[in-house]
Image (cartoon, rainbow, N blue to C red; front, side, top):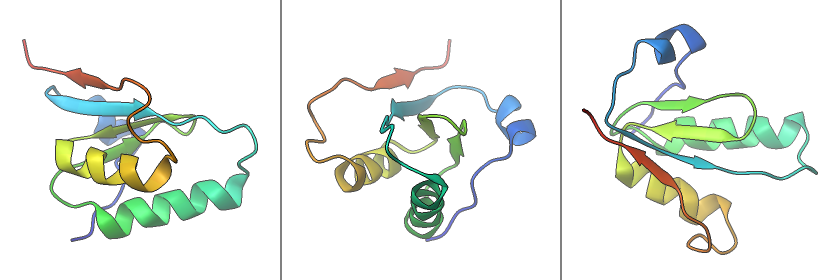
Length: 87
């Protein structure tokens, strides 16, 4: 499985449903963000992935989000994340 993160233009065309999470770490530098993007591209693939270049990651697949959450957080279930369902 491999995926490429959506561009801002591609993201604007996406409609629900999708899931998202916020990951904040003020000590991360660009090299850390590059490592995260590389991980996402190598490990996700059941849907789309979008990163807003700040702290929000959006996934087309709940499984991809869960896998990322378990990898990125030391306590992956300590905070709520979101889900946007279609109307």
